[in-house]
Image 1 (cartoon, rainbow, N blue to C red):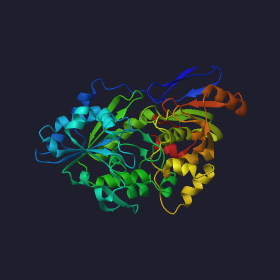
Image 2 (image 1 turned 90 degrees about the horizontal axis):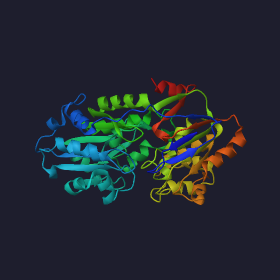
Image 3 (image 1 turned 135 degrees about the vertical axis):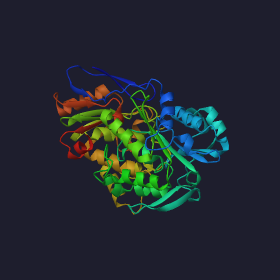
Image 4 (image 1 turned 120 degrees about the vertical axis):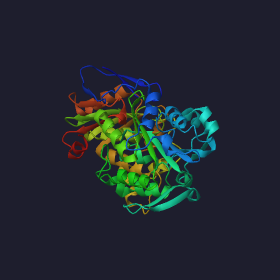
Length: 432
């Protein structure tokens, strides 16, 4: 059996014996739109429950366009030109591009050029969200969950606000896209920390595919709506990261339409839990570091049996990474149990603790092995995980542990495909 894992920019071929009990779990492939540029323009002119973009922005309007950062495969190089074409009647100085970093690091000029195109970077003012600097934020009140909502000032001051992004299953927000462009995208650190605190993350509804009733998803949408966005433009992507659907218009209506489109192709039922699950983090740019790779581990967690093993293949070209507190949180614990305890007993929320909390939860269920060219064995071990340099050899060892009849699952696209056990009531409710 030959399988190609999404890994870095080139992929990782994997060859396994044909006599194993292996199920390759992939989402339903949706072909790319024949002409995505045309579909993007059409969606902006015939919007869902909204006036066309050209009518929303007068010539004297100021416009803020929020776009995803380098850690997401959003086709900004197609989305932004389509939007800017509809805003051609505005002076360039009236248009602001907002990089929705959340608490991520700023993107370099070269990265921005790769994401948006050199001409757009040279032509328009770009603001990169600085979640730490409250001088760049405005508090717009409290959410129904009791958290203060601090949002980027430049974004709030625009007459017309446009949110962009792509929709995929998300490991604690249910689905991405929609309000996440604002929160965490354009939010202050204290707001992100509130939304991602230990109690919110621990809620059993804060998981793949669950939206309504999921406190993290609910608060993100609530925060975004309070900023009065004028238009949402989200896309769906296939495993080749090509556009398969365009959803533009009112935030609620367009996002809901996109979620249902993605749900039908990305969530796959599995009859029984597996002894071994091989997963990825969907390749570049999603597998650029170990922090992001927790998503791939979480996808595998949905179907691995207690006491089983997860093997995640993620290139981690950026390492752990060096920025943020994820690596520090891992280094402060001797094992996954202590890591979980440190997060749950902390007096205040710390950056990246949500990723550490989820990693610890996964490790309480299964052993987690990491195949990563960008990490040394010691780096993987310091992250409380188990190194792997040869997936077939590791699989052979695990089969001797679990027996030759072990059930094995492979998620070649990692969290682009979300398996769920038919015995899981929560996931059954999440899938129509």
